[in-house]
Amino acid sequence: MMKRGVGVVAGALLALPSVLLGQQAAAWTVRPEWVRAHEEFLASDALAGRGSATRDEEIAAAYVASEFIGYGLKPAPGMSGYIQAAEVDAPQLDGHATLTAGTVSLNEGTDFHLLTSTGAWVTAPLARAAGPIPPGAAVLVTEVPGASNSMAALNKLRRSGAAMLIVLEDQSTRDLLTRLGGRTRTPMGLKGEGSAPGRGTIVTVSQATMEKLLAVDSGASAVLAVHPLQQAVPRRTFNAIGYLEGSDPASGTILLTAHLDHLGVGAPVNGDSIYNGANDDAAGTTAVLELAHALAGGPKPRRNVLFVCYGSEEAGELGSTYFGAHPPVPLTSIVANLEFEMIGAQDPKMPRGVLLLTGWDRSNLGPTLKAHGALIGPDPYPEEHFFERSDNYALALRGVVAHTAAGWGTVPTYHQPDDDLAHLDLPFMTNAIQSLVEPVRWLATSDFKPAWNPGGQPRSRE
Image (cartoon, rainbow, N blue to C red):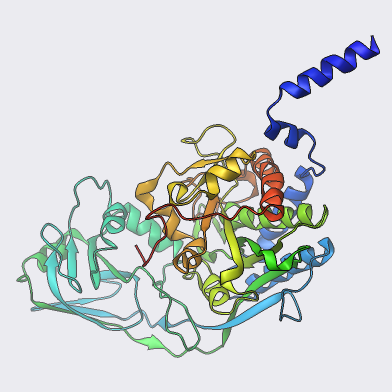
């Protein structure tokens, strides 16, 4: 009976696909309590939402660094510690901007709200969204075919090259202003390098004010005058970096990344003003931590593995931009970059248990990892341009095969105070991370080098 039982089991194992055998034989198990423990701290009210370039972001980076140390990771080449810090400029406005167009003169707060600003004055010819939009225009956005609200209209127009968008106020713009804490969002920038690319200048007006502006001749000069305050306190952003040296360091480096910051404290929604960011992106940070835990706890890989959790992604991807300009290893040595973003919820458009991978058709990385057991699949939201909206993109522009793995791309808790521990799908998250352990270990051990498909590599910002 025992021999027969062994034979049956052996036969069943032989009938399983090799990928599943690898999963069954995996020496490492991602424990749900480890996943929850990271989230309990990173998404706690004690960290006050890990605002970009704040002390709370620094605390989050220190936590990640301490975990790297505990796993046995070393400082990256040329670094004496686990934190890479960069100074940033963060302009603030006085809240008393004015907007003039023809004979129409408007004041901020009473006649319009300034949602986002470059921090500089804007002088541009007035144009209407219904016709061709000349680059550098101040565009009056009344409606856009196929857009259900003003924010949807803005998303359709933000790549138009307009200098300023003037849009009808509605619930979606009021919600955005609330999420911004009632303050104009201005782009932070790395010190001495100018502001990071942002969403430009967006003004919201009432229907009555819009009618006044529509009465002004197209082509008339529109001038938005803003008044920056002097920055009182220098600010820094923080990347946490850990390094696992491979047995053949010359074979290249695998880069696993996420961002550790979020929106901090803002205007209250249903009595809650802390934007915890449990999904965005404590979840991605947790994935990086647990993959570091697994790879450092197993056989030494052939390739080096660099684990990085960036600061100030929410302020314009400043941490990843600084890393790209000051990498501890040459960018040419990076074999692939896998970014993790918002993996804490199942996307209803994806098969059960499966993460989406942005830019799936751009390279052979995603299909290859999937063939080795990773629970990932094509991004079902090409119209959202997620590939260009995460930290992977800056490296992709430099030639690195770089993609982002994500959960629900349009989750209802996005940039809301209820993006908290209670709204995470921890079993989904744990299983997704588990599915990546052996495929990533294989990638770090094999001689496979991911490559862009023809036309897949971005050559400029899209």
